[in-house]
Image (cartoon, rainbow, N blue to C red):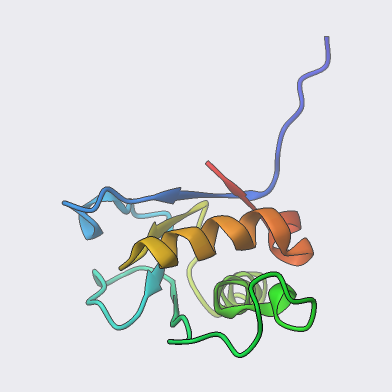
Length: 119
């Protein structure tokens, strides 16, 4: 029986009542908006547009949404050694739409889903 190891970086959602308290020393943060971040963590931020320019699922917008861009920047900073090495990402969405955008990027963006997975 072969054991499969998934090398992708796990992304988990923080509980809404204790967002910053759930990040360990080897965790990075993915934060929606400008919410305060606990010090000492690699992090990326994203902001959802107030009103999308195109319908949801539009081929010109879907692959590189704000969450995908933020996770890509975070991954590249890790690979280049620009931030401390992290083993997981704690997502801190500020809204239901932010949480949905994170899940959509993990499921639908080819680069994000090759590098990250929902924990």
